Length: 258
Image (cartoon, rainbow, N blue to C red; front, side, top):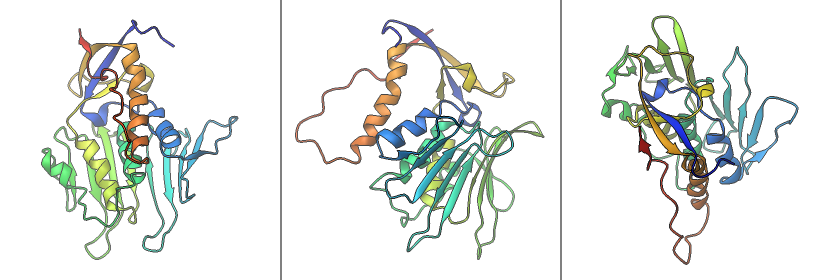
């Protein structure tokens, strides 16, 4: 473990859709440790398989140059057909995590009215084609393909230039809309995304594509961000404590700018 006095350079990147994939542990570790999803992965295979405690949901993370890296499947329920969602390798894990956090939230309900386009309208996205929205930088598109009588799947596509696809996400037509809304809300959030490792960034950016603010952060705060996330999600599944929870350490955001 890195000494507590060690300083790391952290890039805070906007817009979020061009921040790169990030560390998959941001999604997988909370599902396993805070939400009780079991790990059925094969240590000899480059993939992760996590299933929900009720065995109705399965998350597969499998590096594949020709397919989506993340696939989330949910079995049919008495009031809900089976559904799935998939995400490309460079989909920011913070956006995928917004979906899994909502899916595993005991207080979340699929029956509540939800409009996936609402967060986009509220943050300056513009209408696109007959049923879609495009980001202010014209790089991200959210479109639902279908008709008013037969709504179709949701597609999220991020591109640079005319032909360079960065990542793609899809929610099939039966995906509960509150999960799609969780994704679009995280996508449209103006707050920057933190990246500490160049492995998880996009290969290259024109300086006009992203805003990158480099900040010095204590290594212990970077390491503690995931632990704080696990703790916050675990609390949702437990009864209210009978005594106050001890005050936690400083936030990851309490950093020293360069």
